[in-house]
Every structure is written in structure tokens, then in C-alpha cells.
Image (tube, helix red, strand yellow):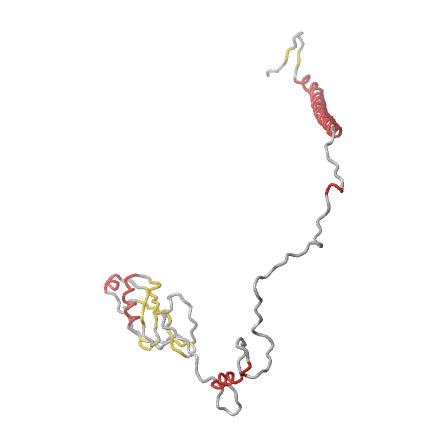
Length: 246
């Protein structure tokens, strides 16, 4: 079994036991030296701060002393007169004022009040022949437009069209041979007479069914849509289903 030793210059011998005895003393000396260095650094920082603060406090200040009289008189808002607005030209007298009853022949030409005769002529046609003398409306107001609504326009409808004649679309031969099935949604413009005027495919499972679905939609017939009890043109959506039957 070997033993590790350390030799001194004078021929002495050091071992592990002697090194362990010297370790605490050397550790304490190192900690003391490090602490002393930190204290010196902190003390030097505070000394520098005190020196610079004294120099700043002793520095001369430069300023200017103003007197209240140097500022001049304060502006007076209350004493200022408002600007005057002058209107050139003669002022026309008002044509409408308090009505004064005068004979018809003495009424000035610029008067805007109708005479009793003119008022009676305007009011008489609007009065009915009923005993109570109350006004009656003898003509209905109808608002109709021949312009077709847009495909995405909102139209207020009291009653939507109902299908009168339903046409089943023909199954395309190429889709039948390929075994393709699906659904097609067609948007149809129904006019005031209930006839389809235009048809547009808005959703489809296969383009092979589009022509057949549009042809079936254009051959259908409907009751017209109603708005205020009057027929109008409106867009509706028709679904068509293509399914093979065994």
C-alpha cells in the first residue's frame, strides 16, 4: 500500500494530516481579505458621492430676478368691445308675420296668407259628401316597381311563391353510368305572374347535374309572391336530388 507525502525545502515531510490542519487557517485568511476589499470598494463609492454632492451644492446659481412691474399691464377681456358687424343695403321687411284680417281687395301683394275664397277652393275637393263632414281618402296609393331585385337583395314579402307545377329533372346519362349521385340548389327568380325568369346554381355536388336542374326549374310554375297584397318578383331556392334507384 503506497502513501502520498509532500517534501519541504528544508527536508521536512508534510502529509494529509498536516494539510487538513492548515486549511481552516488559510480559508479564514482568504475570507477576511475578500471582506476587506469589498468594504474598501463600498467606502470609496460613498466618499465619491459626498465629494461630488459638495461640489454641486457650492456651485453658483445663475438666474434673473423679475419684478411684477416688468410684466406690463394684464390684458383686460371685460373692457374689450365686441366686434361690430355692419350690414350694407336696405333691410327688407318680413313677408310673414302676425295675420291681420283685412278685406281681400286691400291685401298687399307680398302677403303669403291665402284668402278665404282660395282656401275654400282647395279644401272643398278633399271633403267627402258624408253628413259628418269628415275628409275621406278616395284613391289608393300604389307603389310598384318593374325593376327586378338583385340575387342577394332583401325583399320584404308577406307570402312567398308556392309551386303549382313541379318538374322532375332528367338524370344525366353520363352520371347514371358512372353511378354519381348528389344534390343541386337552384336560385330562381319568380316574376309577378309566377313564371320563372332566371335560374342560377348556387350549390352543387357535381357539375353534371347543373343543366338538368336549371331546365327543370325553368319549366316549373308558381303562385306570385305578395307584398301589400300586390304581386312582386322575388328569388326563391329550389333543391333537386339526384339518386339512383335499384
